[in-house]
Length: 403
Image (cartoon, rainbow, N blue to C red):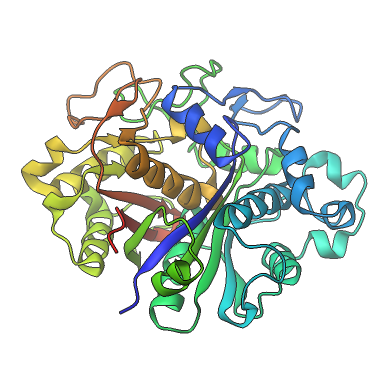
């Protein structure tokens, strides 16, 4: 079966508006959270978010025409910026690849009109079109393969990447541009998650999201876009592309349990990881780093820890496990892609990103959560978890590339 490799990366986050700046932000322990500036805070329990500032628009303008950007929401433009960067990074230009063998898959929960955008609803038909992002990418680059969205809550872009792997491994495509975008900070988004009691009400941006700690109380909303270029090994080698790593395994499964709560004791999470390991053809002891879903909610962090122990046994205590959501917030549809990039960079650099804001330990959570500072650690194989509302679970496994 054809190996699937990663040849391009692009990212827009609150700690950096390119993939390299994003990675530098993570390993330096930067916090992208601040008191919300985009909407009035009256009536909201949560007053902190990881907002992306307007600097990313300069990145988007490098790859897209003004008219195209004007026809997209801010959220979609984050995806366009990350996609443009990833495709430039992989070394192809417009009409520079056999478009009949290339496709685009993005995790999109909502194009997400900002409140300010509603006051000037220009090009509303296109802006509200959920598939606008993959359509614009395929038009610009001449990709005539499959182009569509996946919407599986917080696992959306992880599903997109897993599906991309299947399209390439099956021989249907040679390249898939896969990624995701997050919702922006709006009244509806903030109030909706507050009603579910899912977000932290701590007003201090430097501790509002604190995964795996005893006093954790919920996640903080994050914004962003992330894109990976997946390619068949033969295609990448034929054009002399730089290969970051191999996408060795992937799983997609449903817990069939609850719309908001994970299955008791992490049973569904454990299944997701086990299926991905099976797909990759590796044993648990070969995993060197886990990028946890790590939402900073009580049940997720507890059950994910239990699931890791269930799957990895004693080896769980030797694996660094960190959550980048403490840095960039919970980026929902973009989370799987952005956290995959963290795994890929960990393999490339031999450094694992920290879980910042780690303070009061929880006796029930006793793994190495890489507290507050990055750790040097050889990473040949990295695993990334994405667990979404509705029981949508996905796990991705990246491995150092060996021809």
